[in-house]
Length: 182
Image (cartoon, rainbow, N blue to C red):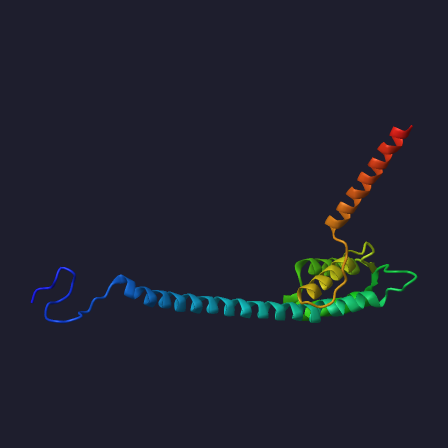
């Protein structure tokens, strides 16, 4: 029995006529299953990394920045404001940093160790330029913002720069109007 030119055998009626078009639904289904499983795996990895990232940031906030922030603002009085920190506050902050060295960022670490070196030289007042307070406040608010907690909204450098630009423009334009009327 010789095959026909179309692929049918002479002895079988109807034949097994499989064409490429018959495989398209199978190929599409296989591709869809493969793609959806890859996307599910990708999103589960992303969810796990986001969850661990949030947990890590929460730990930094709770163990480092909240206690240090409380120590720094404890000595702030409404009439005087923030002046500096003293040896007692520095020793409290140092114990927090020593308990959690893996959670402390390098800038905070450098502030604390430079203050400790100053204390060994005999200084009793630290952070008169508010650098530590500004750093702790900024990081505290950024961590709270990234976790979706309420935070203190401050003007950023870009907003201040744009605000100054607008004021200068207004002054220049009012000056030009003034010159025209003279």
